[in-house]
Each structure stands twice: as C-alpha cells, then as structure tokens.
Image (cartoon, rainbow over all chains, first blue to last red):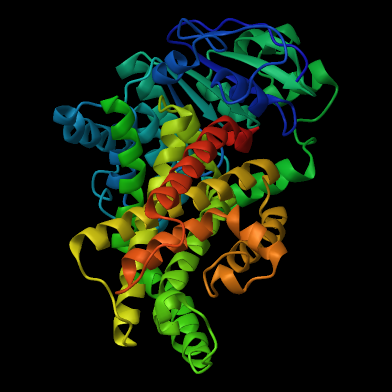
Length: 247
Length: 257
C-alpha cells in the first residue's frame, strides 16, 4: 500500500475497486484500526484512528471478507453476543436485534444454527451484526464475494436501504466492477498499492471518452492491466476458502 | 467497569451457548482422563514403591494430576481454535468492537475456564467410579473450581500468545506439541517431586502446572495436603494469569496484521 489521500462524504457510498493484492484490504484494516499506518493520519467518523481508536470502533461497523459469524450458534445468539459487546442497553436489546433481523430478512431463520445458513444468509447476518449499534460508517470488505447472483442482489438492496433508512456512510472494497458501478457514488480505482483514478462511475467513464464504458475498460485504461490479474497465493486461497464456505 | 465485565461475560456466554448446542464434545474430551486414570493409574497402582505424600493410594494421588492435565490440554487447544481460518473473521470483528483487548483476552480465558470446569465434573465422576477418596466438602470443591479456572486461564492465554506469534495453524501444531508434553511431565502430575532428578525438580518448581496440581491434590482427595502451601499455589496461578493476560492483550491484534 503506497499512498492514499481521500475524503469520503457523509452518506456517500464509496468504493475501492481493484484486483486482489491491490491493497484494498490493507486500507480497510487501517481505517478500522486493525492495522496502524506506517505514516500519515486519518479521521473516521470524526475521530483520529491512531489517537482515538476506541471512539472510532464505537462509531463504525465492519463486515469482513472472511466469515465472521459463529456457525455453532444461532443467528439470534450471534447478534446477542455482539449487542452485549457493543453496549446496547439491556432494555433495548431484544427490540434492536429483532429490528436488525427484520431489516435483513432473517427473522424467520433467527433461531436456526448459522452453519445451516446459505452463503447469502450468512452475509446478511453479518450485515445485521454490523449495523446493530447503528454505526455512522459501515466498512465492507468484498461484500458479495462467493455469492450467487440472487444473493448478491439481496445484499445490494440491503446496502442501499442502509443509506436510505439510516443515512449510513458506506466504504466498501470490491473487485467486481459491476458492484462498484451499481452501488457506489464514487470509486477509487486501485492497483498495486496506489490509487490510479478517483471519481463517480459516470465521470470516470466520460474521462476515458466513452460514457457507456464498463469500469473494466476504465480500469485497463488507467492502470494498463486487466481487473482479473493480481493477488498472491495466500490472498487467492483465502478468497477461495471464503467462497467455499459461503457456497 | 460494568461494561468491561459485561464484555468478558459475553464472550464466556458465547462458549456456554456453544456447549449447550453440542455437548458431545464434553464426552470426547473425557476420553483422555479415562485412559490416564483407569488404565495408567490402575497399572501403576500395583507398584508398591511410589512415595505419595501421606501414603495416599496412587490412584488418589493421580486423580488431581489427571484433572490438571485435561485442563492443560483444553487450554492449549484454545489457542489453536483462535487461529483456525474459520474463526479469524470473528477475531476481526472482536478487535473492531469497542471492547478493550484485555476484556477480549479475559473473556477467552474465562471461556477456557468454563470448559475446564465441565471437564472437572467428568473427572470427578470418573474418579468416584474408580473408588478414589474424594473430598466433597463445599469449600474444597470451590477451591478446586478456582484452581481449574486459574489453570485454564493461564494455559489458554499462554496458548493464545503462541498463536499470536506464529499466526498459522501448521506452525502452531508443531509448537503446541513441543510445549504441552514437557509442561505435563515436568510437573508433579503423575509423580511426586521428591523422586525427580535434580534438573527436573528445578523445572517443576518454575512450572505453574505444578502449583495447580499441588492445590488440587490438597483439595480434591481426602487426606490430601499441599507441599507448597495453598497460599503459594494460588498466588503463583494468579500471578501467571495476570502476566500472561497482560502480554496477550498487547499481542492479540497481531492475529489480524
């Protein structure tokens, strides 16, 4: 990860688009306080990631790329544990959990074991988990990797509802250009650790002189590479494992 | 402070709920104590020469050692569980939650303790079936429970630290084995310190497992007494837990780097 300089507006859906190994996950790890930057600074939800990490964590939600729900518990139990970790007051817990489950459409499956969930259901549970404490910013790392088109559509709809109903700012990473195109207000195209281009999908397409271009073409133009390449062995096997678990 | 406690307990509750969904793991973990007590113990009990303190029957002498050993193994297993790819996403989520690292580590330690306690029940049952003279007084049982909790906390946190350093399952497996067996044999779990060669005695004296077994031996069986004194035993266990938890809290975020 070379250098990054950007500002995301409140209520915006911002995407980092790039192949595996472009540095996207590194960026998310830094912004979610999992990884300290080697230099520079960042403010998330109004707090400094290095000087006020605890306040950043209380204000953000995170949907990691790897499966982050426990298969040996029910959907409800996963939410209950995190409600407690995030300090949702006891009197509000049941209602908040029910509302989150309702929002992602899992209220009927709440008391089933998560290991019996489909990949799409797991992802939706992870969204419920991340929004439980009504964060101001939601980070999503490859939100629909490994999902079938129907499940992907369901996730996209949930993300759009999050913005409409809760005014959440969404910061996501993806290597699916269709996802960036569909969901994001603005996109930063990343390759090999640095940002090659930044702007709304429409602006980026216009900038290469072709308003009906795909972001794939935009990517090739700006980086000279195909979106498909990239990623070391560990990254790829990790992505494949995620796909296998969600399949 | 209450938030901190609530966070620790939430993690322990996660463990309890998992156990409630699938208690079969308790049965499979009980197999090792069966082998040690019912086979190894019974065979060695036939030797007349073992100088157990107070001329205790060997099986009575061994039972606390077996309990401590199963708590040790559960603790070490805990570190591995953390770095299975399956759980890594959950570690990400925990580290991004507002719970301080110490709460996460203590919560994990408490979870190890919960499993240790369930193992304790199994070992007590087994020992009783084999005719070991158990001490059923409530104070004694409470003492053993405390020793189990502290012992499980110590070794599961120790295991967590190793996991944070090696980060991959393959490397951990190798190291896990290298550490567990020496810890077990360089203690008074299966034989009294008095018959050890000098060099092993030294090792046993710096091994927290020794003090855990000593406390359990004093409290678990009738006529048991402590070689080091219960104060020192629990003191060592508490100190070991505190030091290891402090260290683990600093290293925990290494898992996601």
